[in-house]
Amino acid sequence: MKILVLTGSYQDNLEKAIKERGHEAEFVNPKEFNLVISENAGGYDQIYKGSERITRGRYDCVISRIGSNREFATKVLDHFKRHLDVFCVQTGDAINICSDKFRTAQIMSENGIRVPKQIYADTPEHAQFLVKKLGGLPLILKELSGSKGKGLILLESARQTNMTLESYYSSGRKIILQQYIENGGKDERHIVVNGDVVSSMERQSPKDDIRANLSLSGTGRAIEADPETKEICIKAVAAIPGLNFAGVDIMKDNAGTPYLIEINSNPGELIVDITGHNHFLDLVKYCENNYKKGGKTDNTTPHHNAAAVAGMGEPVPGLPSKMKKETFADWETRCKKAGFDFEAATANTSGFVKFYRDLYDETGECYTIGV
Image (cartoon, rainbow, N blue to C red):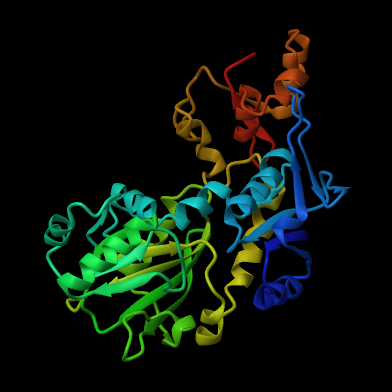
C-alpha cells in the first residue's frame, strides 16, 4: 500500500509500523494541500499539494494524525475520502466530535455509557445553581476543546470558583463544569482499533497535581483491561461513526465504578513506551484489510448489514423476496439497457447509485430492487 499520513509532527512509531508491514508512506502536513470545489454540477472536485494535482490512485489509504489546525485538516481528510475515493481510517466528522468534550459526553450518554455528571452553560449568571447541581465543591473545570490535560482546573473554594468563572466567560472561552471524582489521581488510557482494545495503561498524577497525563509528568504502567472496561471502550468508539481508532480515557472512583472521561482521536505515542506494544501495527493491519473498499464505502458498518441499516430489509441471509441478487456490473448493464442515465447518476455522489455501490461487497455481489 501507499499510505498518506496527515500530520504536522513526527510519527516515529507509525513510520516503523508501516515499514515493518512492507508499505510505503508519505507524511504530509495538511496545510500543504489546496482544496478545489468545481462549479460543475457533476462534481470534478480536486485536491492539490501545492500546485501539483493529486489524482485518484496516488494513495491507497489515509491515516490521520491530526492535532493542530483541525478545522482545515479534517476538510482535507474528507476531500480525499469523498472526492478521490481513498479509504480513510477516520472521518473529519468523527475527529471533530472527539474534539468537543461535551458533544462526546452527549453521545456517550445517549448510548448508555456512564460519564461524570457535568454542565455546559454559556453564562456565569447562575454559578451557585451550577455548583449545587453538581453536588458542591470541589469541581473540575475544563475547556470544551483541548488535550493533554491543558485547560483543566480544580475549583475548591467559592471565591476561586466565582473569579475563575467570571474570567473564562468574559473572555468568551467555552468551558464545562464536571463533578470531581475522588480516586487518588489515577486514570486509564485504552487504545481501540477496529472494535478491539489492543493496548492499555494506568496513569498516576504527580503528588501536586490531579492530572495523570504523561505529558504533564504523570507516570504510567501497562495493564490488562478488565471485561467491563473493554466493553465500554469498544462501545464508545463504535458510537461515533467513522472513528475506528482512538484513545479512550476511563476513570474509576474509589468503589471501582468506571466513568468515561474523554475520547482522543489522535492519542499520544507514550503508551507504546509504557506497554511495549506498538498499536500502530494493529492500525496498519486494519488498513490492509479495508483499503480496497475505497472512500465511498462506509467503513463504520459491515457490508452485509447495509440493506438493513438503510431500512431496505433484513441483513443477508433473509433478504426480502422482492430484492434481486446480482453482480454490480450486471445491474449497471441492466440500467443502461433500460435507458437510465447511469453516468449522470454516478456523478451525483448523494444519489441512489452511490447507495447501491455501498451495498456492493468484497465478493462482487449487490442486492437491488430493480431499475
